[in-house]
Length: 484
Length: 149
Image (cartoon, rainbow over all chains, first blue to last red; front, side, top):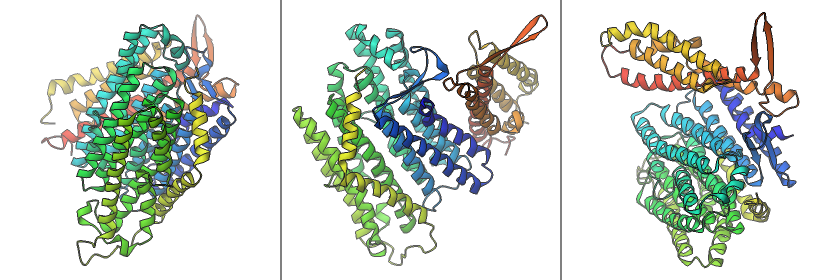
């Protein structure tokens, strides 16, 4: 049943249309959204079941012959990312039913959310370079809508920064795609892989550098990450969690898919360069985080820092490195989204995102400490949480290849990450609330918020305690990369 | 209306129609020549923007199919998505397109699910981008006297 491979893009697109039709009735819209995301999740799991048998699903739209058709190709890497996309969509939609910083219930929020999911899903499964560009564009347009729909001045300011800096990346990407087409005459991944060795090495390096740079803008890597912390903090929390967790990872996936798979083996100097970019991204991201007091800005800078780790896996240019990248990506999307959601709950209980103005949660909600510490310490990489396994895989390979500087940077950044997470814990939980009369609000509707965050923490705990399953999967996925 | 340009307001009426007709022509010629739903849709958006500059965003919105930007976008998206289904039911891949030829005396009319897809894209592009453009133009209108509220 190869038509299933179209589901990651078609199901969210159809859901986006349907939730737009019923937008005047919020309860019905919410119900349709839940059904839509459940269908997507079911399709994603069905895809996962298919690829677990070792099969790669290929569907050529319109039944056109091989190099002409736009193909969707679902291998293990793509299937895992589609599942995580659906899972994040589900968490965000559940969280929207709470009252923790969910915005003002704009009727276009859910359609645009599904648009982002469609863009991510399409980008993960497409087997065509130009089509990949189109899905990036879908994501950009929908994310821009999400940033702007509140219409507040700070939101428009954020959307403008997002638009200006991302359009630059998009334009670069379009140039790069055109250049690739110009030197090879193909856009289809399989045809590109076959045509690449015939291109003159110097020209090929220039084209691939341009392409990688364009993807790095989308991934939020050093030195082109300025758009990310400038725009993210104005979004409603569940949307922020989804966008922050997912969108930069699509850029990373595109780097992995091109350098690690389609154009493998890519020129060694490009991987070398990527390694230094990764190290700089880690360091600058975490330093930016140390400076800030707004939880959302701290977490946004940590996205950048963690993007560095994930890129490092690609820079190592080996099956073990790619497996670490996939493992790290899956672990990180869950953890990062969960931290943003928990920050929203903290906002609801204490009244602010600014760590200087809140406190006292340890007395008021002692067990919430545990909920924060699972993703926070996992982000740092404290054993036995999922982040520890991710970093272990990555650094094992880095040390194995004798990359001492990159390894040291990664370890130092871990310590600084611990500092940031402890800052959130000390300020929001441990110290007294600066307002002596502060009491946690009583009339809250946090049930859905707890369900979403505890659910995501549960997935993290599962990966932590039983990393073998995901590890074997990631290694099998990495083994098929580059085998075209 | 005071702050608007009279010449533009007068010219807008015939131009709007011409641009829309041209966009439909581009949509239809897309089968065999450069063109198609996306380009046609973009041309239609330019007609809507022209009307918004000449007569205000509210008037331009009212001129969109079904009087709103979202309806054409949604209907177009659904139409494009559904146009792939007949081919799927016929045993082909999704978006495998079917063609029929209607003989009309001397001429013949080619009908296809591709046309449905292209019309869907046309409506989706027109609705979605006109929605964005009108929202952005409306931000400006709030600040100037004589503009729509």
